[in-house]
Length: 64
Image (cartoon, rainbow, N blue to C red; front, side, top):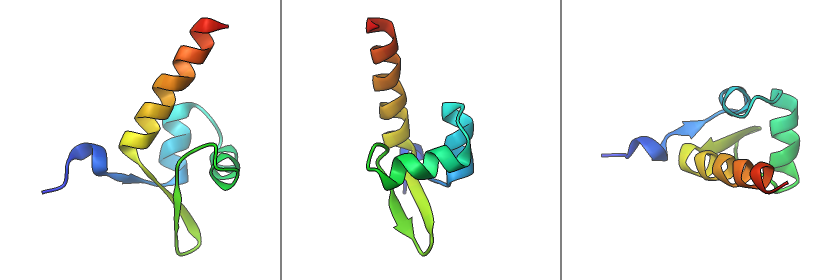
């Protein structure tokens, strides 16, 4: 049985979670800033990776 953190998200869902546009999410994935992989022509993201990225981003904002 798959863990809920193993869910795959699309660019639109990640954009909502990170408060970014889907185009920005795709660009970050293309530049290897966001951990992602391509499924066909679309980027896919593991929810656990996005959660970790969000935590790291929050930590950077606090330190600034």
